[in-house]
Image 1 (cartoon, rainbow, N blue to C red):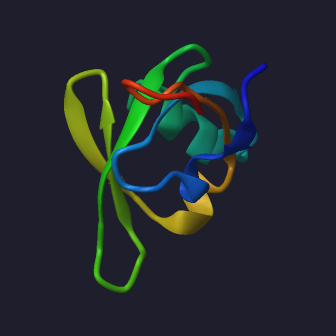
Image 2: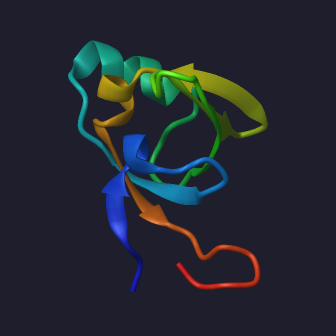
Image 3: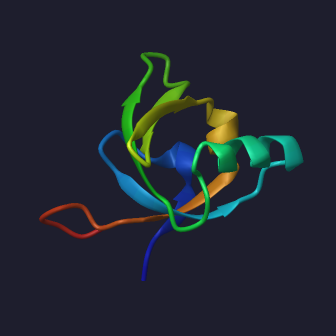
Length: 85
């Protein structure tokens, strides 16, 4: 069983798989264009000192997303290497 949460809740170094994008039509299209479609693996690589935005590794590219946009993406945590999620 995998843990469900939003992309915005990922901590630096955590990986997850996109399960659903709940954004409005224009933002949904933009997120899909960035490769954030269901099934895509995403890793949080950095967070700004203030915590927003955060950087995510998506299909080989690092993309910064605001917290409110990342909060509209539901993900399933992936097990951490050498441990369990």
